[in-house]
Length: 254
Image (cartoon, rainbow, N blue to C red; front, top):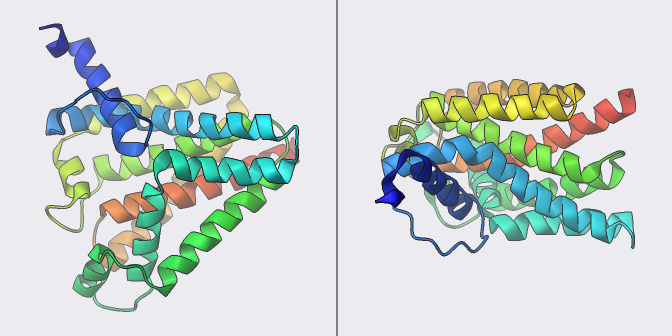
């Protein structure tokens, strides 16, 4: 009976968020239903911080050897921990958006399991740019990795909670129909407060990430009229880069 109390239901949401967004082995069965899905959104930024925190720890340990090696291993760690889930969405999104086709054809291209030239190039550039930015970051790089991964998941959860989907029946549509608004908003507020308490200046990269999210929303609505699971993944990958670049700018300014 305890497994059905309110507090434990939130724990289910946290476990499902970890299981859904990462490859961290948590062998606790949690039903993939709308109630549990809605609660996962509260934990998206925290899950992002865990992903970035693991990468940050690897970076910290490897930095005693060489910063370039540390940067490479940090990027590799993010890919391993997430199983490349969001890179797949990035590739599909670029294949579709840059195809210059009509809306329905773009959605078909994004749904295709095969990857095209634009997708390959996007993934390569994404990985290379992350490596270059991380290797040139000054200051508390492990913390910046944790917060940038958190910022990326915050942006995606805003999309899936407050904006319409482009295609019925997809994973994005399932998440939207779980009605996650109150959990997503509560998690976003808590995450923002936590960021402020760490250092008020770190709200700048968060704010820039949200401005970037607004631009993604405009472009996505223009091209396909709503969001898909692939666009969520692409938004996470690219927002991480925008956030890391913002931290670079903040550290240069300070």
